Length: 379
Image: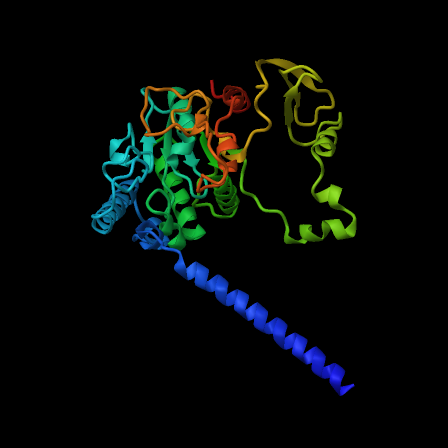
């Protein structure tokens, strides 16, 4: 018996030593990684408490100071850097913000030509910038709305900037943008908040806060584009409890459940191909409380080369100058990421090749805008 215990103890000691050694090797490997200046430099940012008492002009001034700091810091740390075509922190680079048609890493306002009929706040996603919703900004601007698109703290500067950003900062900027938007338009004018990805979560959070705080303007409508809204942590137990289909249904099960002729207190629309062997798109829409659907053939087809859309593709039309599959050459952003055709030997790329196969633009963008206009009665 003592020998058996001794053997077990020895095995446990050896396993502990192996785990310790592997952990040490991993730590050593991480320590050997050479971080670049943009991975370590964290620029200043305006605290949430200050943002809540700031004007739009105050925020823009603070934003300019942040970019001045970043440019100065990067210039000093990269003084001996070799010229690079794709390092956006090097002034000679083709993707350096100063060399582009417009620097969309900044907060901006899009003013209509006539008196604004309402206001729109655009909230971009995580690791994103105000660029992602610029086509919505132009659309609302053309329809007569004043548009506010803030850069959320930690974004658009350096990657390390996000390490010091908190959701409270983003909510403070959301409140600031809404304050300014409602100040610029007559009382009673419609207020729309459009949120993409994490911006969708911020839009929902703001709206819930506005229900309880009379000092916050309530939005007329929310437009949520693939919002980053979480699922309960208890969903992880769905499979073991045999209710997986209830919490994470298949596409077919979700479609059948949502689009049965059953009265529901909300409207729902399904856009899909007309049927097997057809690329023609068809819209099936149930109005709130309706039991019959309105079906309409759309002037759009599903591209044969597209396997599926992606989360990041939704806000970009196919002619977007940066992410479009057929980019408009009227604007220069240094590179066209939507039509990159990578060919070479396996292992030659330093990034995952899957990044280049991911859809980056939405062939149904105009259909989406048309549905938005109809639902919100914008025209």
